[in-house]
Image 1: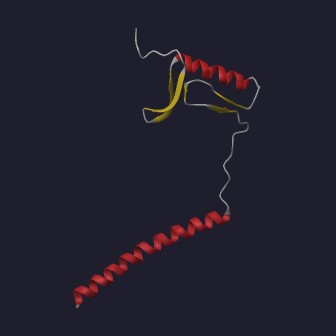
Image 2 (image 1 turned 90 degrees about the vertical axis):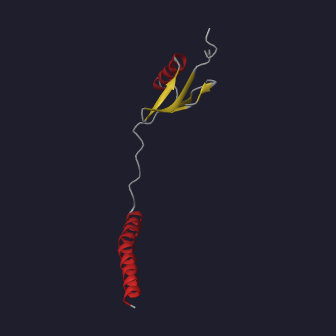
Length: 107
């Protein structure tokens, strides 16, 4: 008998082949299926998946999908100012450095 066999369902969020994924045993995925069925039945809009080895613990039904808030004009202006400052500052610093080198070599 395999000493690593467990009777408790387990399920975890993990990276699979460079992408987000879920890993677990058959009982863990059956628990997930039951939880999704319960959620879709309309008994609640969110629920916890209970289990000793379950790391993925929360399901939430969102209709319509959550939308991200568009950036405000103030945020856009601040971003533009930062990018503009960086794009101007780098060449100016380079020119200043070249000027200083020119001063050193010419004296």
